[in-house]
Image 1 (cartoon, one colour):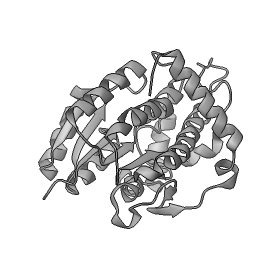
Image 2 (cartoon, one colour; image 1 turned 45 degrees about the vertical axis):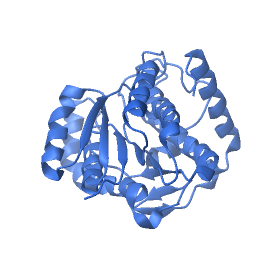
Image 3 (cartoon, helix red, strand yellow; image 1 turned 120 degrees about the vertical axis):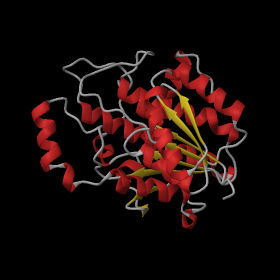
Image 4 (cartoon, rainbow, N blue to C red; image 1 turned 180 degrees about the horizontal axis):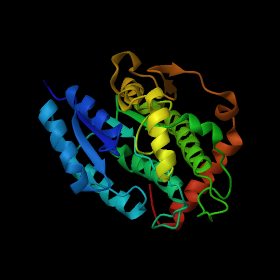
Length: 285
């Protein structure tokens, strides 16, 4: 099979990430597996290689470290002249408040800011036909963009689901802005909502609660394969060629929710906060 180009998947060894990699390899893409721990991810890569006979590249990156994202992006651009697919799949859902090496609330640092920075840094090797898909979540309904968005939280201030929802809402707003800005270049940028998926991110760090979840909750929610299918539709399905600025659910384009889509005040606040934070950390996009 002739190569269809290069695809990059963040969180490539996770529950849905490994399925994205497998399906992209089966479809004929050369796949960059962006992972936080190269040694831990190697068995996953080797298994997918055996199954697909695909060309895979294991490359480490810490999406919670802006300097490491710059290093990683520079390495990708040096090794690969063009990028056809970018899947912003990685995500964290800490049960307790944590902060990144850049002193940013960790959920926002990894889920949103890391992907925002990486996507913009890789923009020079994108072009006509490139498809970008970011993984959001139905929890974006819980999200809110506030001036305190990126600041580390105390135990009392922190709510993991609100933080997660805000990070996904930020990803959604980023997609809306970038899809408008890059449309004339032929770059398509969408988001995917997989509904609730049975992956290891759904953990409460309580043995009893997690065991009950395994018994009574996981059997009734989407499998990683089902969750992955929607992102794959947005990324490689020929019938969605040229579609940009949309949200995908159940493997098809869904309607925007007006209360988010039309909230220009929050979109502008996010732009301002993001630009300030990147400037403070000496990141130039």
